[in-house]
Image: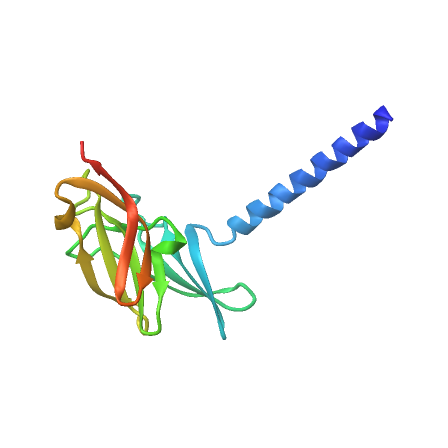
Length: 168
């Protein structure tokens, strides 16, 4: 009986180890991406998330196109502009994909070494994935750090959910 228990524990350990490696292989399939939302299309998949393949000071949103077999086709990465120095998203609920636009809510820094995290809502054009407009919500929260964890669309309103703290 004791040898049967040892055999079962040994077999379970081997199976769990193999499962762990298979999961690791899946997550490392597309290096540098964190995929937060996946939408299936007739040509494959469109993924929304952020990338770490930048200068290391920002985590910009990225839109990736993958065919039905899982092969990479194309990507659009939001890069810095003259308004903000990078935006960070946290969850799949930070992305709303509509017919004509993509709404992304998140946190940004005004300049590279800024300690104040400010909320923003970005509107991307779905045809060319360019940033159409940014709603800066910094003035609504005075000098407080605000992290937008998700948003919810109800009719014509965007409801934001997150945390607020005083900056140091």
